[in-house]
Length: 93
Image (cartoon, rainbow, N blue to C red; front, side, top):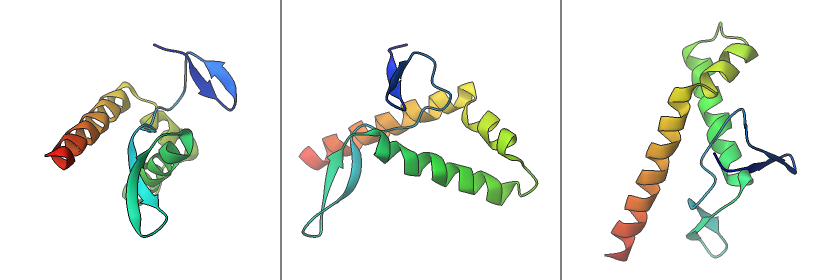
């Protein structure tokens, strides 16, 4: 696995991985564009955590963290990246 920056420091073992590359977002003048950065990954993680809490109101912080950092989350990340690539290809045609 490549080294990633976590809180300004390099890490080869991040606890939670979220899509932060080529995220469709709003830009000035009522437009949209694809942008990259950890600040684009954060809303994905927060949103999934909120959905998990809604589904499992009895879960504690550790339960949410355990679910978000499971190996299955890597598959979700790959699927989201694939969906982004397909979306970009559709826009070009």
